[in-house]
Length: 134
Image (cartoon, rainbow, N blue to C red; front, side, top):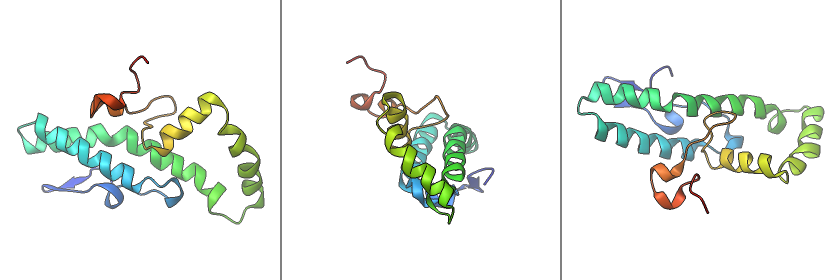
């Protein structure tokens, strides 16, 4: 969908975002959609402005997951023995590589917005701030 609203009806989660199931992001995208929509409605008194802000706010996050889904689908849902071999030989090692492991965890948590960018859940609750100094 180009825009996730139509005549004051808003689509969120699986109804708005086409992704393959192997990333398991339907619930994550839906929850973040709801949080973002709520914040936009709270920040903007005009519903049309709020919905425009919502669409703009969600774009990069959704595009990342649609692209990741498109790229990873052949490794999980195909008859390709080569793709399965690459997956089996590389994903275990990648999960143990510190930087890659962090990025994979952020991807599975639904936080990635780009190859080198991510949402910070500390925006919604300070105890989950990824940028705070430990």
